[in-house]
Image 1 (spheres, rainbow, N blue to C red):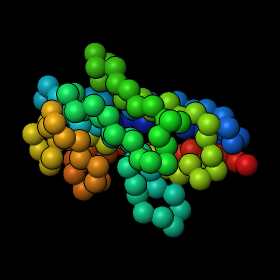
Image 2: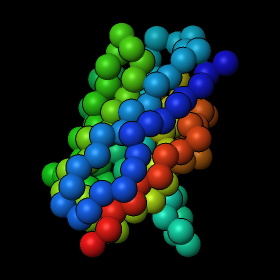
Image 3: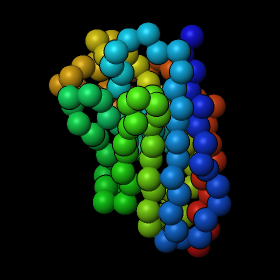
Image 4: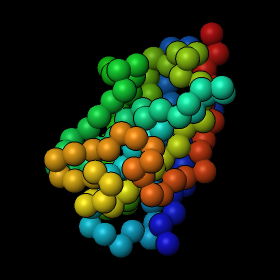
Length: 130
């Protein structure tokens, strides 16, 4: 059974930084696409960043140049380094994954829709004050 556990959320002032972690366990496949999504109150969930082996990385336009997604493969841990945070980054951040070969996840493609991801963490709150 795949489990994803996020950590690292918190409250910071605008311009500050946070690093989110997502520890994955129970993986049975060799490769997965993994992504960070966020949902702010009253807004739809949106993809923030995603990555997969061979397909590189994807970033939402609003976080390009400020956020960096990375993965520690031996530890099956996904990270999201968030710099120059803005109040509009305030949201619950979720980690998600899907095995390669399913729902558009492949070595040449990273899905960006939430419906493509099979596994989800419980979320971690990020609050940025002005």
